[in-house]
Length: 126
Image (cartoon, rainbow, N blue to C red; front, side, top):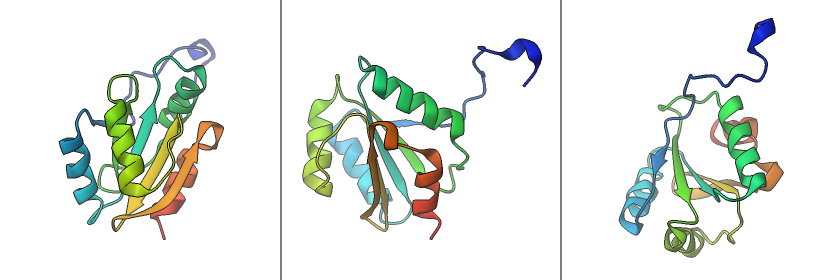
């Protein structure tokens, strides 16, 4: 990082999000999670803690698309999807929240400031 790059956002996109906007799309991602790790990131666009968690995740993301499928759920637009995640995974809803599934099972969950890219990485590299 150069002297004059402070405060500038990188234009490099580290996470290629799959946007989940329906129960059908969620079911598709849960099916993928049987074969490949999937992360469900539940985000509230009006919450400063959620924005900080998202930024921290994106800044520290080092996983490739071959490693995990990262999924993004906008809670304000698709609350029914979040409700279905809780029903299907048994993980109580929080916001922001990251849920990692591997072989169809929840292997990691975190919310708020506990959402860390390195912990997500560790959960799938085992």
